[in-house]
Image: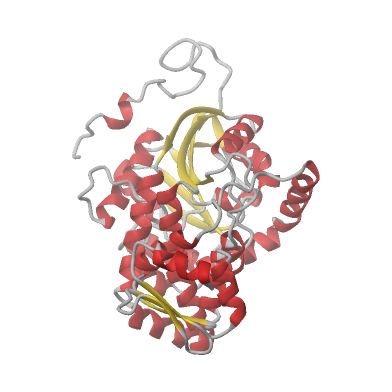
Length: 422
């Protein structure tokens, strides 16, 4: 255990580890204490297998005392490898990954996976999300924005990039709890359709639509994007925090499907998490396995270069891409801090719904997930990109200049120009 003791001493915060027999290593007046009940979890810690230690915490084999921000500083210090340096493996491993992805992303599997995460508990999510329950990266246009204002800034940034106009037909793929759908309808006057696979989100948005008197021009459907039937193409399409669930084997088909739903010359915005490594299978040090087991089963992250490659194969032309990685780190820390400040309430909600065993595991998993992802975005292990694309209409004289073939003006001025009333 000498190497473990050296790693603990190198931690930027004071940390103490209690061994299964009661012996203690590390600082006496520790900011973080890890109490190990079994030897295998201790071996995982010594080996830098942070994902396995996280799983042991979720399952109650390791107890944690201390704030999640401090625990993540300890986790980063104990890592033995760079989590994004594993590479893409041999050609055969890449073939197998693609086959596994194809099998994992059937209609039934995807519906089950989405409901596993998003239908956990609306009351639980409401504790730490902003009032609109926007469950994706915020946009801190200025550093002093509150989470709620930063989420509104993100919603407006997406609407501006799409250049939404009153009366346009707008589709939100993976509409969540309705934040973007309702923002676009109420602030830009579009006819808005949202789709989701989450039963809870569907029911929540239906109530909001009725309560706000928007039933005539806003609707939410419980349907997979692959099965959406549209009477006519949409003028604008957004997909926020959804394409992470599509899978590498389905990505080209996903963009082909979006292209078929989009009016020629129209705009499509994809906003989602991307991998930090070019040849990416999953995060190393066991962190990818942790996310797969406890948080997002079936989730797959691709490097931005791969996403843009598949977007082009799907028949869409990328016209603007922006990396908001540090914004997501700040968003996740805001979520994490909000949850940490209400742990007793969160435990009561989850325990009442699932019982203390399952409820306790869920709470421990989400504490680690939110803080761990914040760390991952800060370190560049993962990123967040907004990709604006068009479906070229083939008319070389359409648009603002010859060859535009879309409504995109091929300048960014329109995104940031002052808008009346704002």
